[in-house]
Length: 564
Image 1 (cartoon, helix red, strand yellow):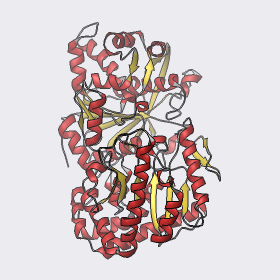
Image 2: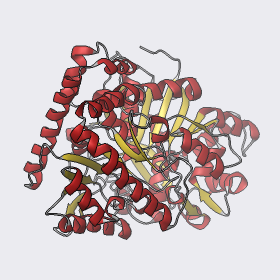
Image 3: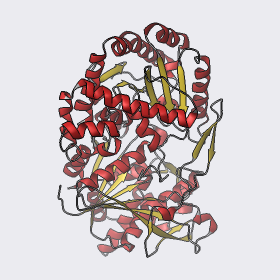
């Protein structure tokens, strides 16, 4: 048990609390959920704030050609959360908007749990327009997004006060969506000092309280709002603070607002820290590499294996380094069990029978252009030749495209077209509505995890970490966490090198060629002809990557560097 003084308030627009609660859409939310689970395990004094998202992100439906349509997610809030007493109030577009909070308890191994408060504006006293502000995750136009960020940042602080949280030591902003909380803290500090205007004393006091984690080197991932929209929605007092100190190129830039008001800022991998320092040259930016919650993501066959050979791995994730001594036959049997469970799930869900003995590659991410899910299909005939000459090959894909991302949707259609073209030689399936349920099966059950984003756009990535915990090696571009995790031929394999940055087609062609060469000349021959060597890579993936890339280790770093 780790003991530390003071409460940390963790703010995130999305948190994956449970596979059955649709309050997340992807990596940011899953990381937030794993963070809270490890905080609870370590008995850290932490409270979390997010939005309720009554209609979730969306339910993905795919037709036979891969065309995506979106449906509302229906779920009963009362089945999962406890409504709290008391109401908060904020101003949005000159209107009073009332808030309530629902509580979810993340239970850890120790005596302390982590309470999560989900903000909800669906109250009869609110304007009908405002009742929907906490409905949709990442939905709507900029006016809706900014209103949501007012609810999260300003409303989140006020709701914590209503609930009795007055002694918070640190406020951790998980991405820039909650940056407006800094304006509310400034207002509190100005009043505490008995002042009426923004002062250096107030700014310094707020800065000492705030920690900011930036998650994306992609410009579209940094929320930017026009000052006219900000003036429409925010209070005159907050606009005065923004215009006096925080305007960025005439706009309200949420990332810069967080940067200016935080005493500690970090990227989410060593490489991402370097990229972020180049993007934001006037700020000191550290790095804390992401991790995953081991107990959540280790599948049952491997959990049972670890229980027999590695005592206390749940309480001390670093002890998974002893997986280096696990019997190869035990690793293979656990993997085959996980693989069979995945293929049985696919047969039940899609009515498609995949081959247990065929080398199976998994790829599942939010579907957008820079993640390049179609890279492996750059030369379909080359891929067909590899499968015919080297060994049976099959692919399992998953992931949602944002409803407004036309290019992302076209990429899904492209994968479906490739599947039809290769159907006689390579089986390719696409699992719709990718979520935690599917992710837990997929990252444990495939033989290889593929990841090939356009560098340097991968902030970290955590799916490969989940795979490593289950003995699944990665084949990945050297970006994000994989620069730290890849020991060539030991924990997996690299595509390209770590110094490649290009936005034209030449790098994609080079990466595709490298991907094919790795499969044809190294990975498939090892899998089919030297099984012991392949199992050794699986074993090293657990011992070297699974033992280190955990949210347990990550939270210790936040405690030491940022919280206390």
